[in-house]
Length: 541
Image (cartoon, rainbow, N blue to C red):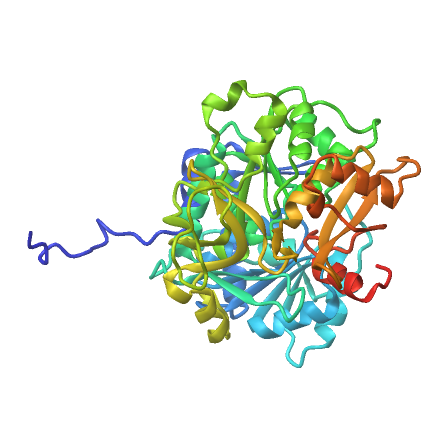
């Protein structure tokens, strides 16, 4: 077929961008509540107007196509609005982790070449010194919030005043090219400077659409922001909820004492969170913890949640959906698609299946478990370990100013996740470990996640992490670092080891146990590299 005389034109080709989700939501659901923040209610029509004003004000201050606008804030309306206003200028949004220290914030502002920074006054203690470290600091717009009265000013103008000066009729622009950058997100940088992950409009549109489909979002959905919007653009739910015409419920702080009442007050139907959030809800004080009145869907990822955590969440009335992804894949990449025939399984067996990372989400092009040395597929036997690799429009453009890391990540035509996995006969992938976290003992591979799974079943264990400990005989043996539940009573190293020996092959059991709080990254991930250093040197955590 010769179709050369059928070119693209404005009638048959429009670049994909999640910005279009807000334009449609305001048209279709203009009077519906888009955002709840404390006593505030913002409709979709008002949200569009506010985003237009923000974009216009940024343009008046000199922001244009390709410029970076950074935002550092908890889950407040301003951060959500920036997800539309900044792309509507064809500029690039750079959300910054609120838990970072001043030096890292300064690094990100410098590396991203941010021309403007929207900063919440509650974060003045880290943002103000970060700005002082810069030779040419960006224009700063403050977010003042009556939920944190008295917070000190950072910049010269407050967010609402800044918006008021913007033109309410300003036209938000779709990108000229859907491959254009929409976002810049930084990895946690646990062992080196953070890497800047550049994402594009096409990928954001597709990933957000996939999440709305996978999570079953509708105009009746009420989404509680327990997941930071700064983390992979809130796993793209900043756009997904708007696509569905649902309601965003903002939450400044992740606290069970706030989460359980918000669920009841607003009729929350969906939320997301890392396994640490699930653990927080499970172990909330009895005066706070309650079974939800109707099922609440919760997506979790970032690390494989132990099956006992899934069991306990289901017992509280939450329906757990397990996903897997990285900053480089816009957040979620694979999902544990539930098979209806498993409905009749006992809860413990269901939870074990649900702990798998699963299959590609509806708009992820391909997933494979490959031998990284040969790039050959491993057998789908549930035992042979390879590296989980991905290929999709929903994979990043690359790392900003880091061509070597970009080339390495895409070697062989696949995105290398760095996670070691097996492929089960049913096509579901299950991560066994990060490549750097696998323990090789006497020539046998031991999955730290498998040992952690057993540890979490101990009734006294709140948190656990397992790393390699040097051993003269075996090369490496497992070393467990354990945080006990409050009021757990006396639990010894011997108790923990004996418990593991009752649930695991003996060579997989910890030979060393250290008790105490676990070091975490700014996104709540356990810092295993820190634990490995302590295990190697025999020093306290």
